[in-house]
Length: 117
Image 1: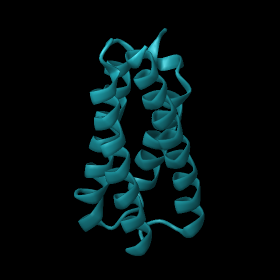
Image 2: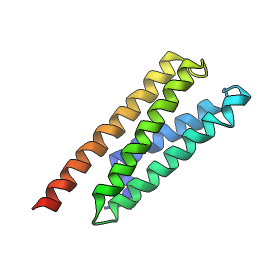
Image 3: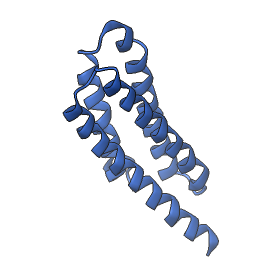
Image 4: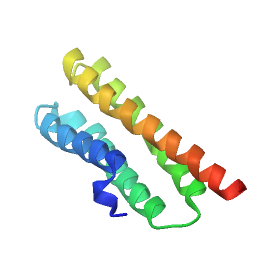
């Protein structure tokens, strides 16, 4: 399966685009620190999704991907608390993060079942 057709990849990519658009409005202090960190975590997450899709040993890669999701979730919450994004923008980002998280969890569970068979 082509990785960029995966719904989890698309949702993650959409979140990355959102962060790039929002980053322009961050205060300078946050644009080059927190904004860059989130973009890097999202890119790392996309790489994990690609690697998991093309590797037979998916579980450790998906576990790493889920770690990236936790970090991204925390940092986006921090953006809201620092008043760099609105509650509405946070809600839109949180919805995408939740979608990615659920898809990665389901993928991880299904790959574990395949390994155990």
